[in-house]
Length: 130
Image 1 (tube, one colour):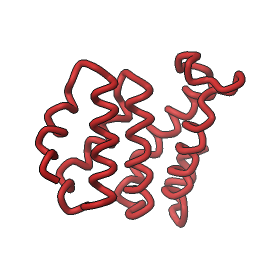
Image 2 (cartoon, one colour; image 1 turned 180 degrees about the vertical axis):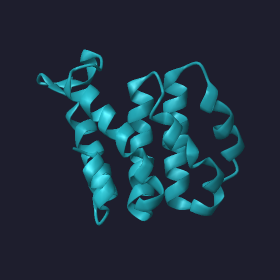
Image 3 (cartoon, helix red, strand yellow; image 1 turned 90 degrees about the horizontal axis):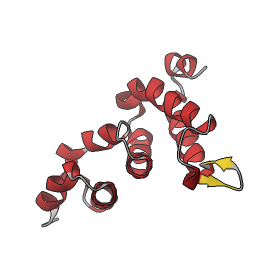
Image 4 (cartoon, helix red, strand yellow; image 1 turned 135 degrees about the vertical axis):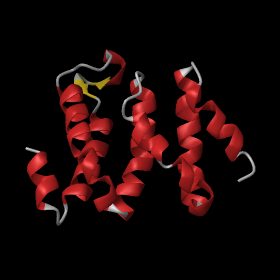
Protein backbone atom coordinates (compact mmCIF):
# COMPACT_ATOMS: atom_id res chain seq x y z
CA UNK A 1 0.00 0.00 0.00
CA UNK A 2 1.19 3.45 -0.93
CA UNK A 3 0.10 5.03 2.35
CA UNK A 4 1.96 2.65 4.67
CA UNK A 5 4.61 5.29 5.45
CA UNK A 6 1.94 7.77 6.57
CA UNK A 7 0.26 5.12 8.71
CA UNK A 8 3.57 4.26 10.39
CA UNK A 9 4.14 7.92 11.21
CA UNK A 10 0.92 8.30 13.20
CA UNK A 11 1.46 5.40 15.61
CA UNK A 12 3.02 7.90 18.04
CA UNK A 13 0.30 10.53 17.60
CA UNK A 14 -1.08 12.21 20.73
CA UNK A 15 -4.71 11.53 19.82
CA UNK A 16 -5.87 8.02 20.72
CA UNK A 17 -8.44 8.08 17.93
CA UNK A 18 -5.67 8.55 15.35
CA UNK A 19 -3.58 5.72 16.84
CA UNK A 20 -6.64 3.46 16.81
CA UNK A 21 -7.38 4.24 13.16
CA UNK A 22 -3.73 3.59 12.27
CA UNK A 23 -3.96 0.12 13.85
CA UNK A 24 -7.20 -0.54 12.02
CA UNK A 25 -5.55 0.44 8.73
CA UNK A 26 -2.56 -1.76 9.52
CA UNK A 27 -4.90 -4.66 10.22
CA UNK A 28 -6.57 -4.11 6.87
CA UNK A 29 -3.20 -3.92 5.09
CA UNK A 30 -2.19 -7.12 6.84
CA UNK A 31 -5.24 -8.96 5.52
CA UNK A 32 -4.83 -7.68 1.94
CA UNK A 33 -1.05 -7.59 1.56
CA UNK A 34 0.79 -9.18 4.51
CA UNK A 35 4.25 -8.93 2.96
CA UNK A 36 3.97 -5.13 2.77
CA UNK A 37 3.58 -4.70 6.53
CA UNK A 38 5.87 -7.35 8.04
CA UNK A 39 7.98 -4.67 9.74
CA UNK A 40 4.93 -3.22 11.50
CA UNK A 41 3.69 -6.31 13.32
CA UNK A 42 5.22 -5.18 16.61
CA UNK A 43 2.71 -2.33 16.65
CA UNK A 44 0.00 -4.80 17.61
CA UNK A 45 2.07 -5.94 20.59
CA UNK A 46 2.80 -2.35 21.60
CA UNK A 47 -0.89 -1.51 21.45
CA UNK A 48 -1.47 -3.78 24.46
CA UNK A 49 0.28 -1.22 26.66
CA UNK A 50 -1.41 1.86 25.20
CA UNK A 51 -2.99 4.10 27.81
CA UNK A 52 -6.26 4.25 25.86
CA UNK A 53 -8.46 1.11 25.91
CA UNK A 54 -9.82 1.78 22.41
CA UNK A 55 -6.31 1.58 20.94
CA UNK A 56 -5.62 -1.62 22.85
CA UNK A 57 -8.91 -3.06 21.64
CA UNK A 58 -8.11 -2.21 18.01
CA UNK A 59 -4.71 -3.87 18.38
CA UNK A 60 -6.30 -7.09 19.61
CA UNK A 61 -7.94 -7.68 16.22
CA UNK A 62 -4.59 -7.75 14.44
CA UNK A 63 -3.01 -9.71 17.24
CA UNK A 64 -5.75 -12.33 16.94
CA UNK A 65 -4.93 -12.86 13.25
CA UNK A 66 -1.21 -13.08 13.99
CA UNK A 67 -1.71 -15.50 16.90
CA UNK A 68 -3.97 -17.69 14.80
CA UNK A 69 -1.36 -17.91 12.04
CA UNK A 70 1.66 -18.46 14.30
CA UNK A 71 0.75 -19.15 17.95
CA UNK A 72 4.26 -20.07 19.10
CA UNK A 73 5.61 -16.62 18.20
CA UNK A 74 3.06 -14.90 20.43
CA UNK A 75 2.91 -17.33 23.36
CA UNK A 76 5.00 -14.90 25.42
CA UNK A 77 2.06 -12.49 25.46
CA UNK A 78 -0.12 -14.79 27.57
CA UNK A 79 0.67 -13.09 30.93
CA UNK A 80 -0.09 -9.66 29.46
CA UNK A 81 -3.33 -10.84 27.90
CA UNK A 82 -4.43 -12.50 31.14
CA UNK A 83 -3.64 -9.30 33.01
CA UNK A 84 -5.73 -7.26 30.57
CA UNK A 85 -8.59 -9.74 30.90
CA UNK A 86 -8.46 -9.42 34.69
CA UNK A 87 -8.54 -5.63 34.41
CA UNK A 88 -11.60 -5.83 32.18
CA UNK A 89 -13.41 -8.25 34.49
CA UNK A 90 -12.62 -6.10 37.53
CA UNK A 91 -14.31 -3.06 35.89
CA UNK A 92 -11.04 -1.14 35.61
CA UNK A 93 -11.91 0.21 32.16
CA UNK A 94 -14.07 3.32 31.78
CA UNK A 95 -17.80 2.69 32.13
CA UNK A 96 -18.18 3.56 28.42
CA UNK A 97 -17.04 0.00 27.67
CA UNK A 98 -19.78 -1.64 29.75
CA UNK A 99 -22.74 -3.22 28.01
CA UNK A 100 -25.73 -3.67 30.31
CA UNK A 101 -23.39 -3.61 33.33
CA UNK A 102 -21.20 -6.30 31.74
CA UNK A 103 -17.60 -5.05 31.49
CA UNK A 104 -16.51 -4.86 27.82
CA UNK A 105 -18.00 -8.18 26.65
CA UNK A 106 -16.65 -7.90 23.09
CA UNK A 107 -13.19 -7.25 24.44
CA UNK A 108 -13.47 -10.25 26.75
CA UNK A 109 -14.50 -12.48 23.84
CA UNK A 110 -11.59 -11.30 21.70
CA UNK A 111 -9.12 -11.85 24.54
CA UNK A 112 -10.48 -15.34 25.17
CA UNK A 113 -10.21 -16.21 21.48
CA UNK A 114 -6.58 -15.07 21.40
CA UNK A 115 -5.80 -17.01 24.58
CA UNK A 116 -7.50 -20.09 23.13
CA UNK A 117 -5.39 -19.98 20.00
CA UNK A 118 -2.21 -19.42 22.02
CA UNK A 119 -3.00 -22.21 24.47
CA UNK A 120 -3.99 -24.77 21.86
CA UNK A 121 -1.41 -27.60 21.91
CA UNK A 122 0.87 -25.54 24.17
CA UNK A 123 0.87 -26.86 27.74
CA UNK A 124 3.12 -24.09 29.13
CA UNK A 125 0.94 -21.30 27.73
CA UNK A 126 -2.19 -23.06 29.01
CA UNK A 127 -0.73 -23.26 32.52
CA UNK A 128 0.09 -19.54 32.48
CA UNK A 129 -3.59 -18.80 31.91
CA UNK A 130 -4.63 -20.11 35.33
